[in-house]
Length: 357
Image (cartoon, rainbow, N blue to C red; front, top):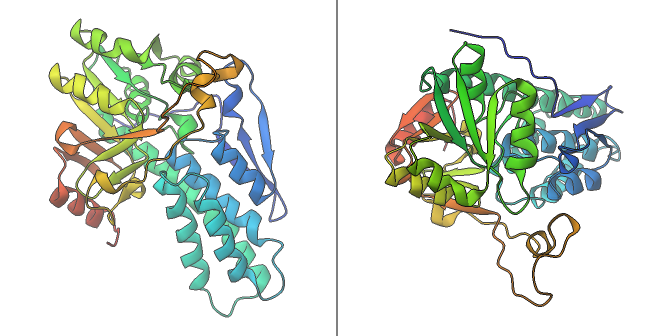
């Protein structure tokens, strides 16, 4: 059953023609302020990505695509490709764990390198057209993941999610939240427990905000409460997103996801990962090879401007962790559901999606 889903906000978009700009919802100010940020330069886009004004692997990929446009539109005569290569290097360094970022910049660069003989202006317009195609493709991908995942949600289900993998993490209706929005639109009664997601509280600030906006019942809990809620029998399934998936099905996601997966496994609760094939990195045999970004200590010791730790305490602040494929019930992609993922099954899904590796 297909259901039309319209959400009362848009994560980001390109405004105007080639000389236009990117407009995005400034997510660091949510939920108290809804401010539209205008990004007109590559440094501005790098800043927006690094400080999480835009976040979520698919949304970062879309933003990076538009960042490529910002980087080449003022290129000197005959140097569009050179500018594109330099812009890719700059953007890719903004958040190294999110594979969709480098996937999007590589896609645009390949597109341009295959268009020999075009004028500078034609190459610049082709860059914008390809960036828009990435955004439109993500919207369709989210829709298809939502339809596949909704089939796993029964009427009356209560689900748990960690971090934000909703519409605000994509150009569409989200990854982890796409099945929830789709099930809700199909008339199923669905409720969600949202982990607050320390230290930057994406679950509290963003997931709860967008679910409430969409009219989906949501309850906010601290990260440490997740195991308790599962033990009380309140959770029917877990749905999370991912920033990078290794070839064997190991899943890298926001710090704390691994603990949620362990608790779900202990309580025999299905643990579903929702992510597009662009999040799968076939060059990495396992999750041990995924680079893990470390964030500034101040995000833990002075979260949101208030000091909560001794001045000289040492801090370890990885932004992500890796959940082994053995703890993953399924990976839901745009081409279907990979049950009990392993290398062979992930490679089959990649081939079905037309991904070369």
